[in-house]
Length: 130
Image (cartoon, rainbow, N blue to C red):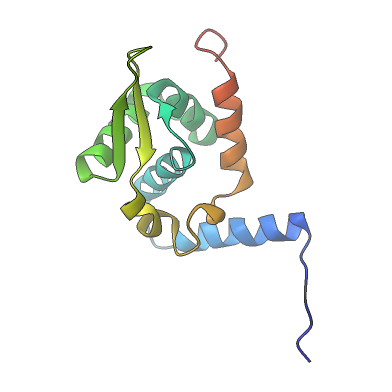
């Protein structure tokens, strides 16, 4: 009697957001900011400017505060850092071993669409536009 239930995109996103918020229950605002910073850099390598712009859109954080969060995550070993030879910018990406701690057992699938959208918008905006 097990029926194959399919959820609409809206229902799937609603469940994803509920899980995202539920995973942060009992944790402080700083932990949630760190987790969202990690989720921003989890999909692909991003420059510090792109991460900062994304966090402005998501949390309204200053660039200085976002730099502090990035430095803390790098220090803990949760973010990989690479210097782009062409542009000389620092680029960041989530360490594979840290995915389950920050994002839960679903990993990248757990990231809400709003965060993915903020990153996508920030990547398209150039330094003079944002």
